[in-house]
Length: 125
Image (cartoon, rainbow, N blue to C red; front, top):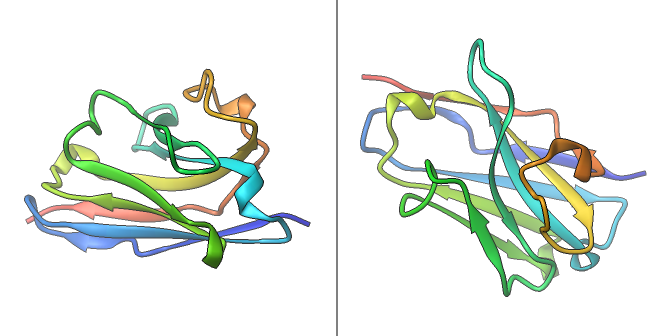
């Protein structure tokens, strides 16, 4: 059974950084594209980023470009979201997710197969 567990969330000041991790079990991550979504209070869940199975292709939302970096380490069955220059509007629950194949239409939740439980990121002074 697939299982994804996020870690690394917390409270950070504006301008600070956090690194989220997503540890996968019950699957060989090298066969899956992986992504990150977030859901802010009162808003729908939105796609932030997707990375292909080999790490050769990455995709970002406009809000993530230049500040957030997705990466993966297939040898550890883990992938990451490095978040820099954080803003209060980045406050949300962040979810990791996986899907077979690559990242086409990666912003659509239903294209992903399995989800983590979410980790809270709060950006506040």
